[in-house]
Length: 333
Image 1 (cartoon, rainbow, N blue to C red):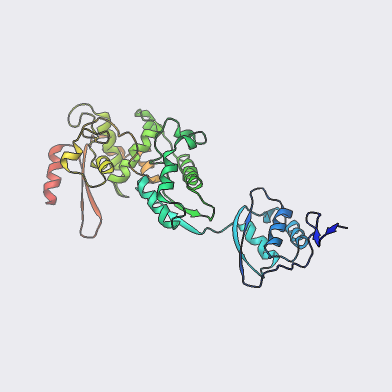
Image 2 (tube, rainbow, N blue to C red):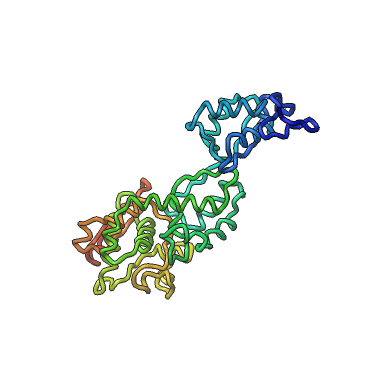
């Protein structure tokens, strides 16, 4: 028998089986299941929230349901009058997100931060997200691919992410890094490694491919850039010559003067790759860098040109020589 003092049960779990604070049917109540909480602790939480008449019916039902109905931590909104079996099913399914945020391929870190701010209605502000993302050292110990990296640009993998009520900039960034880690595990980096690129440099190149290609030309654009990176004679002398890298730096379509300015992201004045990725590339661009188009790669294609067609799609032309490239441009004028 429980010792009752002042009408309260002192023994844990021995709450009265008629809850005087039971909420009315249809009344929404928010409860949080702590990480690692046991059945009895969850029962107490539900009882105190006025969602169940007593703890024992809940723990008995939870035990009967077995491991398949194991509650997941998180914050839930449960309405009064919900049966114990339905509550157990809700907790086993896990908390529903309050919102989602979509990171499209090609978004910059700045654009991701803005999207998070808007999707979370300011709960995770743009400034808070950027501040967390700038603290790369906070994540490097848990993600080996961040060793020696100074920016999370490129690592916030494009996908739709759930925003739970307790989501933070840190938890969301970790979800994005987890996704990146899972995606690159499917890739074979043999080719970029054979060309002297680290995985991080492959990511940088993939971010440029993302900005310079469409869904039909990623492998071809990657091949052109590989040819430029490995050539230290005519026609390009090791310069990548991508306007997209300067566009990332200046924040708009660059002028001829801007792409030739002496800045770290000018791939006209600096050989090789820029210092960081210029966006978050999707898996297709990463795959293109890992397996570029062999025909263009082996046959020395150094140029490409694209123009917007009337139907809104891009039309690409790939050339081996500057004369062919200029002719392709002239034909489109």
